[in-house]
Length: 102
Length: 175
Image 1 (tube, rainbow over the protein chains, first blue to last red):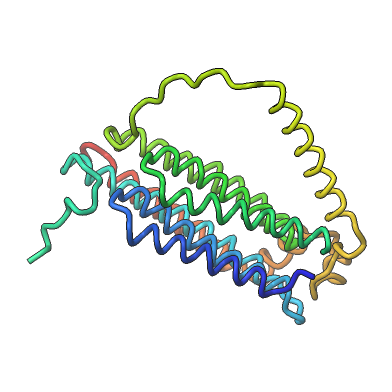
Image 2 (cartoon, rainbow over the protein chains, first blue to last red; image 1 turned 90 degrees about the horizontal axis):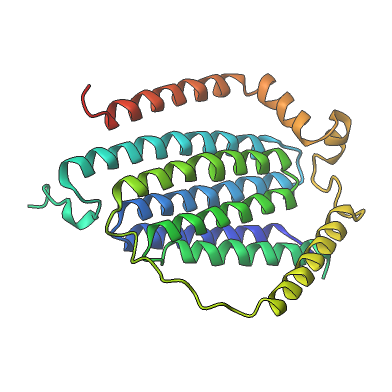
């Protein structure tokens, strides 16, 4: 019997994998992919609650539409920043961007 | 062990497995391709949770738009990280693989048919009666989106315009 907990556990694991990717990778593009994984995990949470809560609600399906929209805009701007960085520093490895380090 | 449960475990294994591969591959293009597989798995989970419109939006926007953007930028930027070119693989046995893939396809189609046509599946959520009255998932989402959530919808379009302008300004050679 499929319950809410199944989907919550899945989204937890997916979110954890996203966090692991963001924290451990040097390539900035993979870090952005980890952020997308985290957003997808949150979306799964929303839809799971919309499906399994006893009260009728469709906001759990509408809010992920906005999350996907914002994620699309964020990825566009983030990759544009990456391209500008690459043009100036000729690299996208995060440990080479350490000007602010004292 | 209902068919929905089996389908959930299959989709969950696919999603989590390919997500783990995304964050561990050395080659950025491989990571992008596994991320596409992850998004497809998530779309399947949305269908399982009766959010069919959201599943379509997920495939269109994420797998069809955002990942194409990622791949373009990887091609522009990631010149040394793209990994060594792999040589041609030795020719593998073809016959066994075709039979196995046909069998797996048949089993998967059978599982999908059983899972989505059983009486347990349709309209399970609290919205079941409302959904059937309004004619399905897309119509219900449309009614809610354009009546109750119209302002966030318009603001999202303004946000996309701002993001578009910002991306163009940031990535231009000379302003």
